[in-house]
Length: 77
Image 1 (cartoon, rainbow, N blue to C red):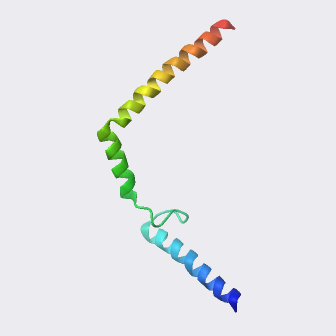
Image 2: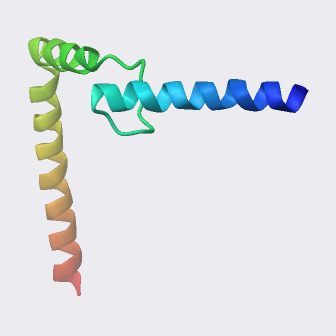
Image 3: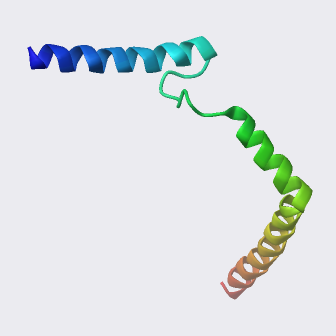
């Protein structure tokens, strides 16, 4: 009897999880409680603070350093 109760509660929970995702049009294993607006808010906040531009500048500097290092190693060969 306990196994039947646990199995029915588990199947209800999994069915609810998948049903909410299907209803929202998400993938089956996505978190149905996740709020997609949070991602957009975080991106807008980072853009307003200038973090995206800072990240691009940092990556450009590192890319130049890496190119110079690799070029030096190739020249040594």
